[in-house]
Length: 46
Image (cartoon, rainbow, N blue to C red; front, side):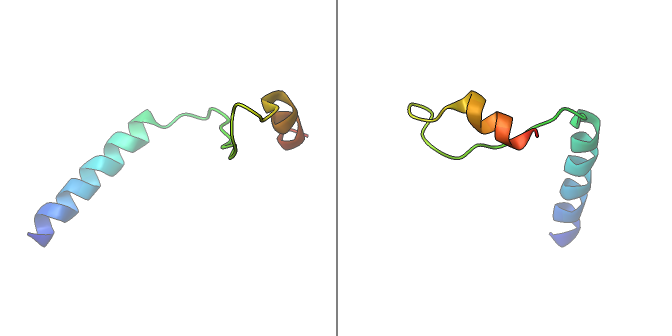
């Protein structure tokens, strides 16, 4: 059982490595209906 879980984890990590990019990503938390997204991002990219 443990060997199967280990093998599955290794396969998932290999797939993730192939999919990963160098794209810039940032997570904003809040209500998108009231948040000024451009302003929030401008604070993070300075």
